[in-house]
Amino acid sequence: MPSLNRLAILDIILDEHYTVDQLQQLLNLSPCLYSLRLFYSVDLKRLLERITSSSIRRLNLVTKCSSDLSYFNSIECATLADSQLGNQCEVLLVKIENRINVLSLLTSMNKLRSLIVQCKDDTWNNKDRSSTKDELAEWLCNCLPSAYSIVRDKNETSNIRIWISKSDNNVLQS
Image (tube, rainbow, N blue to C red; front, side, top):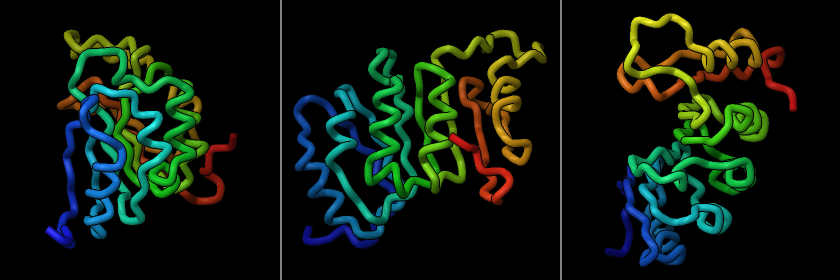
């Protein structure tokens, strides 16, 4: 297949047998690719440093695997933010180890419009949906400008959704 000109959404499973070069070749054949979802069992740091695509605006890095590998640490968040994909990303879905990394991503990823995040340090109890105390959502509301919209996903309660306002007085300062 010489080109995948109409491909807009790609879900891909990465394991130790999949090379960065193979993924890059696939991305090169997909000039209209808007959304990339990665299911991975490998360290993404090297991958994020090397792959490029001028069309991708949505990254989904929330995997269903249960290993700690699926949670981004501070270094991996910084690598993502500094990568070519991170610099142009508008919608990001990611699992992170620590809530402080949410603020780091929002500060360093200037084009983000929406961040959907799962935090390993979230104390929300999925089983008790009658509880009104959402410590992580309240913490984010206190840390972010008031124009940012922060809600817990009703269907996937481990997700916090943040819609980002880009007006001058609502930009998060580093």
